[in-house]
Length: 382
Image 1 (cartoon, rainbow, N blue to C red):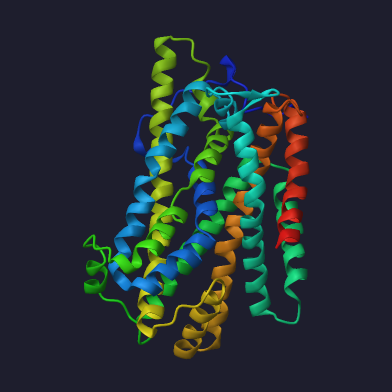
Image 2 (image 1 turned 30 degrees about the vertical axis):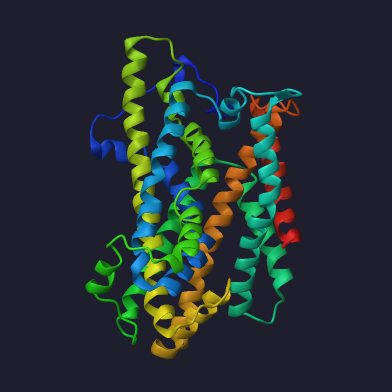
């Protein structure tokens, strides 16, 4: 059996001429699918819907701006990846500042943030467990949490990029269909939305009483710091950097790199369109249903409240369909986040000198170990 190609190593035999037409560039998209699966999760389902519930349609523009403006930073990280072939932590380890052991302060800081964020992702595991418990309450939430951890570990531990990309695309398709269906069926309820409502939310008004919740939603929606860093690994594993090749200063390299940068930019824009559309849909649900009722449930009670609304208007099957859609939305985040965390954690360990990240077998083994350790920690902390 031939040795698998290591996308983290640049060599002349891996270079490939970039596609020159828009149609052919679409054939090389992929990192955006994983990123979108990761982005659309609890922030969109809970925080965005909460902002809509509190403010109504008036702050709809905040969500749109949040999703659109952050992509500029993502593009710069992607550009650095293609031009250098460096991982995120390799780049961070070259920043100015003190070094502690083999790694700079910046790498240690990212590691500390990851440790703190174990609680945040544990909350997503809990959210998936809570939704399953609403659907089938006979099984306790802790059992669901650890079962989900095992399932997502089994899905990620082998670490194949193509598999992660395709499964992310499938989940994107499902939760996009779910969000549009949710909005469509609002027209059969007392909470239907008209264009005047949407237009009123695009006037760039921000009342003082909604300032805090708007800032919170701005921070958690769209592409965040984690996803920007993670995009680096997916660009590498898709092959954008290895297709460009190592920078030898030649005109051929400049031409290849420019071509693959165009592909990466298209990929990032596609991701932005996906998560902006889905995030906007969740906001409109909150504004149309919960704001009109004056009902602002806390946390995952939001999901149960929305599902109950569909039950009242469309029957019990609508509630089940909504809960399944919410489950897929949160599970996609868990799946894509774990796939990215395994790579980022392995990269950090490499910069600290604890593993040889440049060695394919060592890296693959570490990714597999983290694929089991991380979800178990998430479930335990929940």
